[in-house]
Length: 400
Ligand code: CTP
Image 1 (spheres, rainbow, N blue to C red):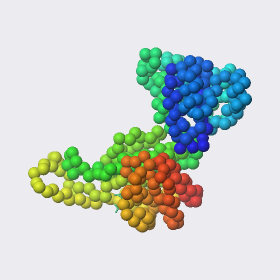
Image 2: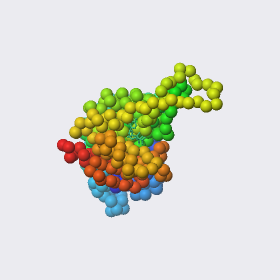
Image 3: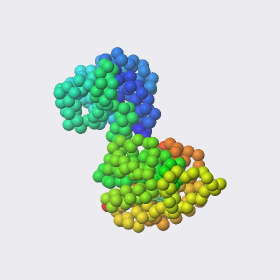
Image 4: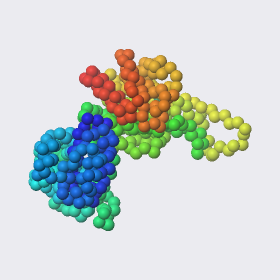
């Protein structure tokens, strides 16, 4: 998701510098080109060679290095970056930035860059809480820098409190968000995800293998693009994505009730949940005993949430459904698009490897009402989500 993005990682001298090595790996894995610039103190904790090996790029340490300046000057470094991440940002670095001091390679670049800056502080909790540090961090926030607040927990100095470098996953989420276009800003969107559980006794239920990954990816990417996201989720062990309001439900009936209440205020709704089509007609009060050779379970249909949304949809609301099929993919998907009054349908061939339930990738075909069919290559679920939102945004632009 960070393909073609250039990230400058500034590392200052704190014990958390060792975690920055892993951050470089994650950024590179996401497709970014990473250049590391270290303060002299940072080089006491981790060698430049570590960062050079992980990033595949030379590491900047010395403002007055003739050799480094001839390869790529510090002003050029500052211009190259799409995003500057400071991790760890020590109290000293934060103070210098707040005061506009430029007395080494990193602080000089920080004054010269016009790229967004993400500050990830890490220090002793008393240093973090000190009024000077708090004043300085507020100054950086006022300048428009993003602050990824430190986490609480045991610190390297054997004290407890706020000051640990934020979780690397959170730093990555910030990076994705800052580097995503704010194309859904001001839009209210609802995504449903995961399976439903339809109980037939207190300890058993009917369900399906959905893990919710596709719906969670849709919610995550919409949040990166600054939408106000509601995620109505069936049972799954996944963590709620950063900046997303999750509403947890269990049954199809609960999911329908929560979605119906929110729907009128939504600009777009994407139904990625694998909603059970049937539920047991009765739920036994006690656990069913295996006393018979055969058991018959009487099922009744659940309400089709998407079809109901399609009936009540306004002209300006965009409605997206999924079609998970094992045969006649296009035929069935087209039928659902029309029958449920959708703007888009994302069709999934469940028989394909790396597609559908539980996988991290997906191979889908997106159909719209004009008959346009986009056959996407196998991609991560986030990439598929980005393709879906791109199309939703185009529809928003047309109905404006
Ligand atoms: N859906 C829904 N409510 C249901 C069943 C499905 O809102 N009770 C939604 C799903 O979230 C999905 C779309 O309808 O976006 C299509 O779901 P799918 O299971 O593929 O199709 P069905 O309409 O249930 O038809 P069938 O099971 O016959 O393929």
